[in-house]
Length: 147
Image (tube, rainbow, N blue to C red; front, side, top):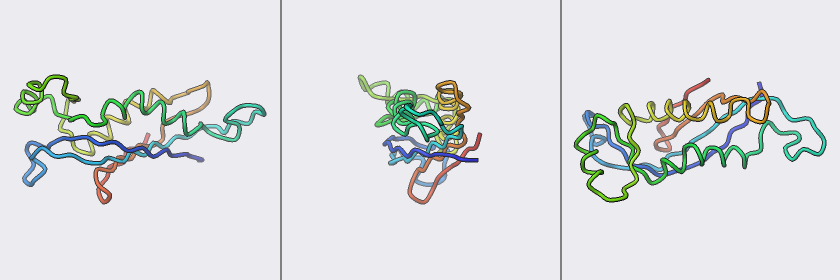
């Protein structure tokens, strides 16, 4: 199976409220997102993406629109973390993303995959699909989810 992968980065804050170590405190990361797609290689003379599964610029534009720009420089918080939600709500125009679970890298990878799978599925009438999302929380720690 032939795949292509686009790498993107964004900054976001979070906390793991029940964690036994420092991760229970408010903090942030420089996340690295890898979006891996599979599909048919375009074989049509004159097409801009001839010889490609999908243009990397199109992968980036769609990821930015549906995920990265929404999460970049936001604080991602669980709906159940009312202490932090109340604090964030007290700041006018604060960029907050509320999710239905604890914002661990595992959960964020799953949410990212669920958001992006429909964005790329069958795009341009091709057999295109999201094969995998990899989300690095640090250079040494990450989560992966396959389609």
